[in-house]
Image (cartoon, rainbow, N blue to C red):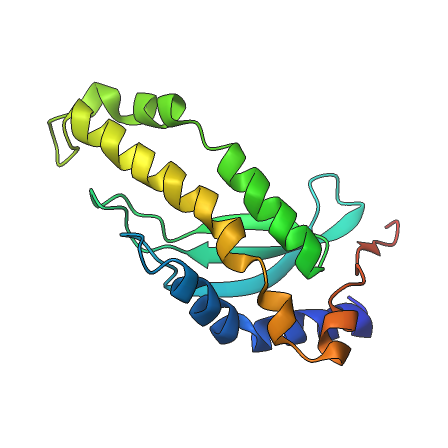
Length: 160
């Protein structure tokens, strides 16, 4: 990786506590919250570019589903992180989510179907509130940091 890319990850990770605190204040009415956040990078799926991702730890859903790792890939800007949080929520399908567990409903610690549906609805509502909770965070930063975080840092990898 190059120096600019490393500096962006360092800057983003220095803001994680502030981001989590800011978003949790906005999510106070939600039964769920953000327990942790870490920014990392990895080669994109086609290994042509490096991707930055935000790995959110949401703890557990009201029914106890483990939500400790939810990766959101973005271009290193706060604007794109906002957009990707919105897409993350928009892509969460309640029916598909319930179908994952319906075969085990009421057994082996899996809640009954009505509870699964309610839990998935709560998760969807929470995910939809994430981008709203993040909106405005940039306004809390200094103009210099805002400017830095408005410029993408996508990095093309060398052919090997």
